[in-house]
Amino acid sequence: MQDLKLYENFVKACQNCTKCDLAKTRTNVVIGRGNNINAPVMLVGEGPGEQEDLTGLPFVGRAGKLLDHLLNALMFSPEDYYICNIVKCRPPNNREPTREEAEACLPYLRFQVRYIKPKIIVCLGGTALRYIVGGDARITKVRGNWVDRPGFFRIMPTYHPAAVLRDPSKKEELYQDMKKVKEYLDSISS
Image 1 (tube, one colour):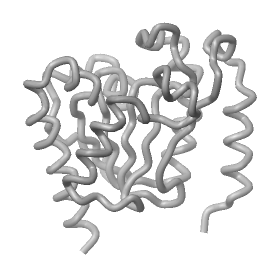
Image 2: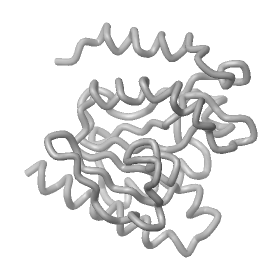
Image 3: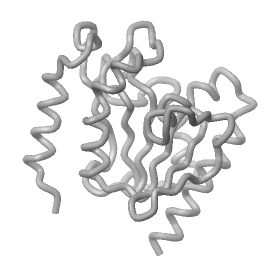
């Protein structure tokens, strides 16, 4: 059983964080949503948008609705996943987080990974891919292919749902990538 006090201290640390300038413009810190105890799948995006900043929850805007629809269509159970981001505060105008902002926030993501212990991490988009797999990783080169971290977890890089909203031709590839995630999850759950 996870130490709930440890998680509560993590949440307080995030809420009180002033490690970068994003703290000055945020409305809410956006930590995560879903099963934060032992979700086998962790989906990681770039950072909160306007709706997320207002609600304090990740992926609740248009991209989040698309992601929820996809997870439901593939019959993921709500206990199967936890959704979070590289940065916990909204970058102004929904821009990509700077290296300094991401580096300031990565210890929080590392805590989430250690605490939840997912078997699968889904990198939603290039920013998540760069900070989780490595700085030279490109979504167009590795999307849809497993990246293994033996003894820890498997990583599935795929498109961010916002990219699919901008370019609907990527929808089928996102679906197929998430189908691979579901198939692997089913294989390790049985």
